[in-house]
Length: 456
View 1 (cartoon, rainbow, N blue to C red):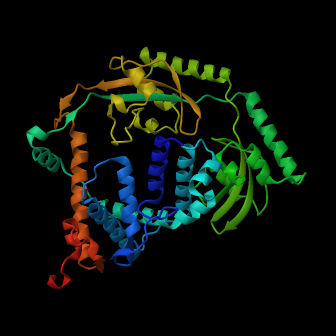
View 2 (cartoon, helix red, strand yellow):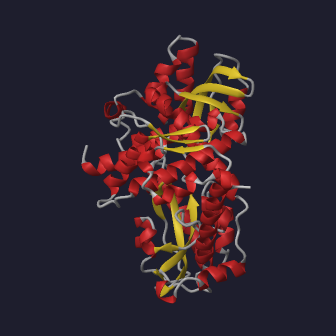
View 3 (cartoon, rainbow, N blue to C red):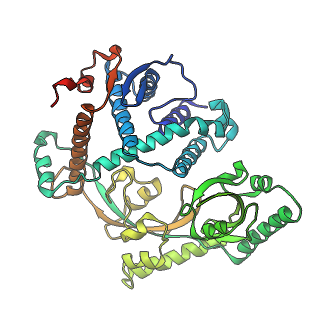
């Protein structure tokens, strides 16, 4: 495994476990702080420092102080979440566990053996080890969200924030674009649909009539990640699955196998494993019909026809999105406008665009619509899109009129930072805090050792 790969896996592992334990600790642990009912371990500080050191050199000498401050803030949030009875469901934790495992596996080309060799544990053992840590991480996020849910800024506050920035310190914004898209999903032809259905009906017969193992056949034939677990999807409450799948699953009795059902993902057979009240545990075999080259060409031509309707003013771009676009795309409910996931607004620096979109719009004029081109979503599904260049700005210094939405976001973040700092300061006075003397030389931690006897 090369150095870059190790870095990304380490980074994903850090996302996986937040501020808590790695699979193996090289630091001899000791409690270095107590925040209410939560403990801070020395290894937590050292693990974060090690990750930061892997990302950048020449860390400040007092970096442990800053790390300790952040960990204690998270522990205070966790402690308060328990006092306030904030809830995170087991199903939510499992979904997050599965998603993060999938991300790590993705960097290992979905090689389970490589995963287990790297961690020295099976996937289920890794999940068991990190489950409580992840639940605490989600509690912290939920508590922080509850605290800051009411934080907003008025236009006058945005203006005050902007005017407080020294003129020679105003940020310089690169050229930005706004992009509209119409996304079209190729349709499966009749022959491929029949092939998928016939295969599943054959597999169902082999299980029901022939006594073969559902789990073994799922491992061999299923077209999704659950194949590694014999098709087992774990526990889920109502609302977890797409409607067609959920309706069929909740009708089943224990050990019963459904007929072939269709969902947006393909065709399934489902077996009920267990039921607890409103929660079920099922496994399935998913067969995705193949999209043929002929299907792809039909989709390309269909979208090209839509493009010509817009170009000839026979239909507006917005209406074309609603009439022909794919409803599962984020842009569908935004009149086709793409949202930058890094900022939450509709502006993209050219370098932030996916390469296929970048090279498409780089030479386009505002209002122009591209020819259809194919792309794959994160699951590997193939789609076609046309994009419209809706605006392009020139490089410039920050301007309140031109860049209001960006400045507003910066003002909100500054206000949130101040808000959470005030909240921490308020809670410190009513929460038991104890810090190991090895951190006595950290000025940033003085707010945690306030003299409570001096408070009214």
